[in-house]
Length: 531
Ligand code: 5FX
Image (tube, rainbow, N blue to C red):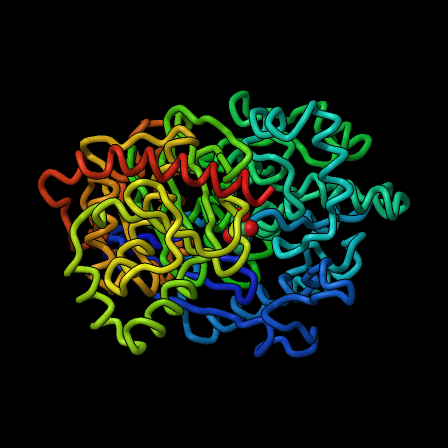
């Protein structure tokens, strides 16, 4: 008798511009990849970059049926390519964070009785009370943010409870806006999902619960107790707890795939659906971050994911429940002045050449002889400051720096800011800490050397093109073994490891200790002058 076919695991990513899927086998090899680009493959919805930016330029939404139709399309594509759905043992997925989906009264029963003869978008076409879902790019809820912070006792209090102060894109504030502007629409809504739990619901044929990690991006979940905050719920809209359902651990097996997929595509009826989560938490899983690690994406904006044990929520950054370890947290920090700032200085001082830029960086001493700089061409998020600020050894303001000093001040300054803000949120560098660098600037060794020196930790590079999808597939495998308390890192240790590119220069810790303190004080000085 032939040996049973090796199982497959699917990882989905419902991101802003496209729907992606990755299929891996037990050896974690990628067997199949597919995607549907919303603008290109579903032009009937007329989105740009997967979204509609409304006239006020503040509201940003995506048509919920576009996401449903994208799933129809990608499954049909896989079926025509001969993909064997019966081998899929488990699936999980990710969704862009904060976006929300509003299921109309009666949708539950439609979802439970999907006809295998129809594509999903036909069966579900009347199931949504809000046809254009607010997404993470929306910033139209300032009024709701102010009233939520007020109701809870201030911004810091809200951060302590939910991991973040009020943010316009966070789901509680989006729900509050819909309730206040269209109470009749809110009343007709049977269930509210995040993009991630909405996507899981499509596979489950039932309302999927919100997981703790993506739930932490709503300004509604108590991140330590892992339960909704009744004060926050009541401040946003009445009867909200019922519409949200109970949040669950990110590794929970939600049930078996809906019979719809068994009949229409040949899935195995025992295929497990694991809780879906947000794209950033799923990427953390895809990059296989472990205790004490940092992932840093050096792109248009610089983004950091930190693995944290003892979080200290602050007015800056976000703390989320970890998607892979029930005892841990992840912090998310975002800086606007990333690559564009580095490129501007490269163009001005190194004739647009990274080689020249790197030479200048390598020719200067660690610590830049005490010269420190802050470079914010656009208003920064953390800290809320703008402009270029240079200080010499004795904290005197300097109008200019020589070329080499300027280049090192920029790179050291960017990384010192990251270390300081990470530590403010409770992050601690451990002897095992690894920094996983991705994005454009992660190709530049001289920049990564400074990163390694400032954090006193080794830097690795890692390919993250599909980290949210891969992380979802890894989480599907891990979720099946969650009761054994084995870590995700152990389950996926066969996956290709990151490449070591820089280790800290001997003795740098002594140089940066006093410099980091000075940087923090100078940052305060800039902020008080800008006020
Ligand atoms: C995180 O807080 C964000 O708003 C974004 O990174 C979205 O998750 C992108 F999908």
